[in-house]
Amino acid sequence: MSNASTPRSRAVELTAIVDPRDRILAAAERCIERHGIRKTTMEDVASEVGMSRPGVYRYFADRDDLLIELISRQARVLVDRAQKFIARQTRLPEQAVEGLLYIADQGRRDPLTRHLIEPDGTSLGRRMTDLRTLEILTAELWDPFLDAALANNELPRGLSRSDIILWLHSLGVMLMRGLEHGDADLERYRSILRRFVAPVFAVSQAIVVGD
Image (cartoon, rainbow, N blue to C red; front, side):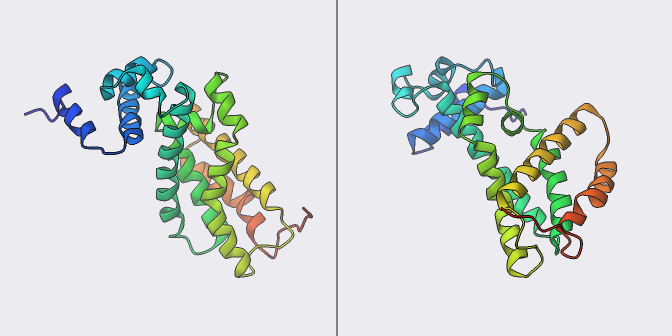
């Protein structure tokens, strides 16, 4: 017997979600699974959730507003998983290496987080860039590990936190593109990161720079 949800069962599942914003976001995610992020419209979402278009606009100013909220929520799920994975490593150099690989490999597999990591030239991509959405989420991912390393004297105090976050973000985008295009596999990138990234986070070798 097939486990695919029927339209009626999907409607029942959506109505079981109490918060209207959560219902709309769940409906939008289903529409994206069917149509893709670029082709999903507010009409599609309204039809899926069983609301009128004005009803959807009561909770989200426009399509970009809705998608940014959905993408950010999905990305935070990935951040939570990544932090649990990174925490298995005991030292910051290995945390950086394995965390970067995890985010790049997992992020490219999900159309929502992939759109966040590498936004296009659409109004949605420009708004996410203007809102510094990815920069904020990158900081949320790495700040706990950087804070712990600093408290344990494992990170030079002169390193600019904003520069570290920007650098880690840039490395993550580069890795995702490389994995997507087949430039190298995870093991080769792991070897590269251990040679060129891990030493930066080793106290004895790190260069102290000013803010």
